[in-house]
Image (tube, rainbow, N blue to C red; front, side):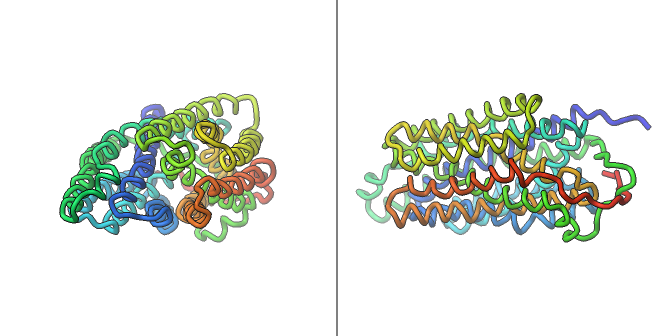
Length: 422
């Protein structure tokens, strides 16, 4: 049988990493935008993250079942269409000016992202030589970093620059304020409509593209019970590490604009530009990390990067002025390899438990719904948003443990046959 080429499918799958990275990195723009529009506290504003990452927890197992029952191609197309639906819902959300409607639209977007990530991460990891799976996944995830660079810069100019300052809004009559906020709400329609349309077009391309099956070791079958996956101790630790890592990443990126405007005293648009630099550092870190993995174990790099970020978080807590901004940019650089490396190490040697293992790691992304709210609570209670960086500091300690010890494969699954049908 003629082998299906992998280059074009890999390019297509890699485009997904850019798309969901772009969607995620518009959230830090939405948070200050919606906070002003609906007069929200920091904790209330973090409901944006909660709506997104709770979806990961609720949808990860159904996504895994879709992959096991219908294959990765169907899963990817389904994820793209659900992602597009949520993007289109931003139009009625803006028309109704209801915060809850925005949260619903974000939740639906995240349901689509969950299906995509559950499919694309193991698929990109497995689409080639198993010995280079971590490097391949980091390469694909690098385009997530490119999205993290572009989304804040583009989003700030499309969304944040369209509105009035708080002083201007407070000077208006009640009716004038309502009309002004309605105009601001309308600024989200165009970017999300364009995003939804692109997603539908890519879904059509996937529908007409032949994707190669993921080849697994002969003599193994997919397990029928998710609890079987917990036999792998390194998978359990990867779920824990991913929970804390995503909580740290979301805290850093989503609350950056609020942090930067208070810690360094800069404007929101300036903060958005620096957030773009955070994304650029994230992107560069991915490429450098992928290169270094040719010479050093990925687990060792993960542990070292996490320790460096623990030290940087102490500066983020106690630093002043622009030093705090440069510190966060540094944190983003050293966060760059964490998600794909934890994922790749977590599904290593799972064999028949790979689909369920992938779902469990994706479920752990719910850390992004919980830990930023702890960050916000600390910020509101203390009156100092810098103290919120205690949360990422603790998170990186957990990631360091996984990198140095928790990733080790201690329980090997019994030999079972596995299906290779996509």
